[in-house]
Figure 1 (cartoon, rainbow, N blue to C red):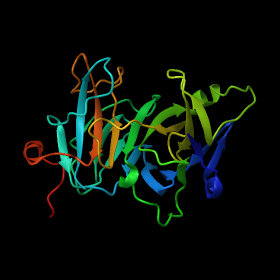
Figure 2 (spheres, rainbow, N blue to C red):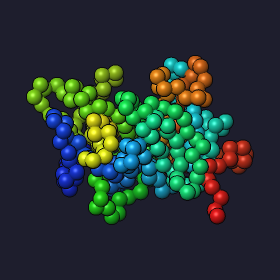
Figure 3 (cartoon, rainbow, N blue to C red):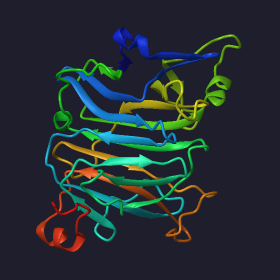
Figure 4 (cartoon, helix red, strand yellow):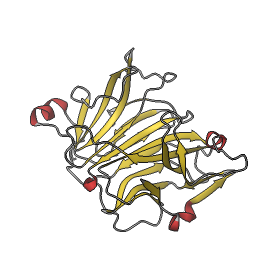
Length: 286
């Protein structure tokens, strides 16, 4: 069972908007505090220009990864992890970007193309923005020297989990406030949230853009829990899913009767034959 770490030095990042308290920062690092040490999981960046959200997974294992557009029949469970048809390789630690318009893609500026992308819901719609899973946590790097321009937001565990998952839900602040069970109560920046679909209580951190940035009426609710290791995953790995389909904002490549998502995974686990067929998003050095 995990617990949220005390605010400590992060207090200076706490913002208050009515009954909601949240961490407001242009950059923030989400991490795991375990007996292995303080492990960096991912960095979240809010764009001051238009409010776009950028997610940078942190991984120190095999540098070759894969980015792909996954497809599943509508109504099915989790998207299949088969990426041979619409996947591309990369030797870079790429970022996931979800723009104000809803366009989502993977890239690393100046080093890769942004060819692997799709249309999702714009950032004026409540949605599951992304999900990040880490398996066998030795693939995450230890926090050595914290930077002073961002908060570090750790979920703490007294044991060593084999797998952890973070679900990032994009909510209007008014929706969060309306869910407070006490008429005069407040919530955040760290709390526990009941998932009404599953009945499970998730440790949650609220994170939003700082004052002066776009989308001041919105926050990310970062829920963390333990994850079951998928069959066949025997080495440290990370997976990020984003760009989920939304019925009101169809993608031009959408196929009737199916549902798509974007996936990033390290390491790629591709053999030589698959590498030759998939190609890469990496740009040639100039």
